[in-house]
Amino acid sequence: MATWRPKKIIFIGTQSSLLKILAKDNETEVISSVSFLETLAMRFLPDLIVADFLTAESIMQIRKTERFAFIPILLSAEKITMNEVNATIAFPNIIVCNSTLCTQDIFIEHLKAIMTKTKSILPAKTGAIIKKTVCFVDENIGKKFTRKEITNEIGTDRDYLTRIFHREMGIGLWDYINIIRLEEAKNLLTYTGIPVKEIAQRCGFSTSAYFCNCFRKHFHISPSDLRITRDFKTNR
Image 1 (cartoon, rainbow, N blue to C red):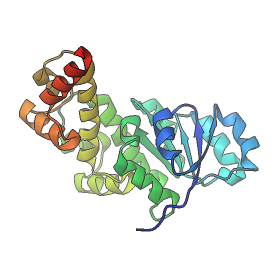
Image 2 (image 1 turned 45 degrees about the horizontal axis):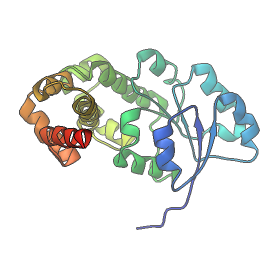
Image 3 (image 1 turned 180 degrees about the horizontal axis):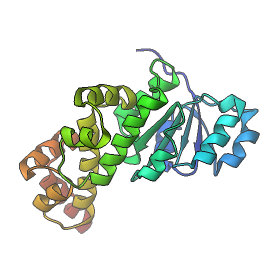
Image 4 (image 1 turned 90 degrees about the vertical axis):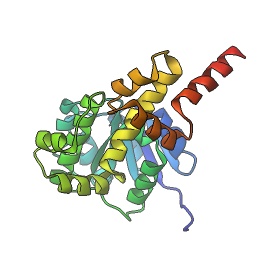
């Protein structure tokens, strides 16, 4: 395995969880808004720009800075709306991702591949399909839905969406959906007393048995055991 060579990353806004992960092996700069980019440009040429969601005007401002014209941009939020997606779809070299997925190891490896140019971001027109899919998932994450329902809403073919989603995000569509659902379920298990069966329903799983199986595979602990561990720590 090749030795990782540190890359340069600019963070605009918060994204503290992802910053904590990426700052371990890379050079990072944090600024509060795009207005500080021009000053930074002369001394820090990034391999990636990470930001909370930006307006179309802010993205245009980034691209107008010559040194940042083609730098990959990652935009993420806890919940992605269509208004935010519409601000990005005209621009190339932008990935939109739910912030829960951004900190997962599989996505971090995908970002590294983008920064080393061993993988590329899809063209804007194709990438727009992925952005709309990510938005659909965020807006419906607590509901049960099928691939057919997603593709009917987006207006594309199921096999095509499956293929391009993995290329853009570094993870399969249904794996992406399950991770977001499972992380939300973990929060509910940790911070509430809602029954496991109800949590499974709230997070869009078809049955509680399927939910428990997925949870155990992802976290290496059952939902019930997580609750027992939580209660033990609380009562100590």
